[in-house]
Length: 446
Image (cartoon, rainbow, N blue to C red; front, side, top):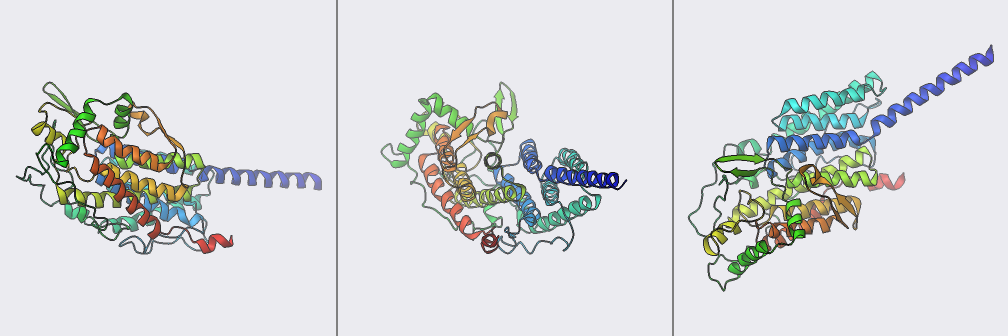
């Protein structure tokens, strides 16, 4: 009888341990965090947010996810006091058990819901995701405590976001087209208004100000055929006329224009695609998968990349609307060939600097800081949009190709790309130095 009782107790203990281990393995899988970031991206594409606005969404949602997830690893520290205006984030209750991966996606999705338009699409996904956690075997009190904590973190992050001057910029006047020959004018086929002319007034996240990385001005505008500016325009024109298949593929791969207008006779319709920031957030996902990164460190990677993107757009837009430079398509049509059309559709904002060059270099620098240099990867981001994969030996190599793509696409002169890489790299290196996410003293003692 005693042996039977001992056997029953042993089996019960084993079953209990197995159930506990299964639940822990289930909730620690970072797949739900990656899927949630991708869901935010899908809704950003659906709602057609401009690249700068998309970067803002990524920044706040990623910081929310990180601030909830970091408690799982004692070596990770809060970004409060490091990001402008971010006050101490609510802490978990001492002595209580939490599922921090659940709190992290809860914080991310609640924050995202307040920043996007298609709330119903996110609500449906959010409900199904929470049910996955609920069915994981997690104790009910841990489940409820975790989603409550994620909600508190989100509420704190959204209060912080509300003070970044974004709402005020929604009522600022539209860009007024300048009379000067050198300045940007709306481009075909939709001749859209200039996007986010006041973006430099958004509160920065890590960098000191929008103009901290103010670069050299572009070459002086000129119609003289012997001038540097005319020669730069000729380079864009000739490159566009003699593109190789590889150059066309590169240009289309990095196009990342969230709102391409198609004209068929008298009918005009839009094609929705991923933004430049969304492309680099997905590269972050791919890097995490390759390295089998756990939830708190995946959240760290997303946050670092998102903050580099957000500050990169603020700094770049400060440059764009300082110089107001004419786009190659406009210049070439006026002074070289009236019927010339670039491979890519020209985005609706001034030319200098190249936004993709800036933010790609900033994001690549952030990723290098997390995963190291010479990190080879295959980028499959654009396959869902009908394009092929591309492979790179490092994040920097990918960023340099993204910069080159703008010349191939016919939407930037060479200096905008090259100087954009300089700005983005400098900005990214500054953020890597300034923003501390690891408590090295704790890490060295473990």
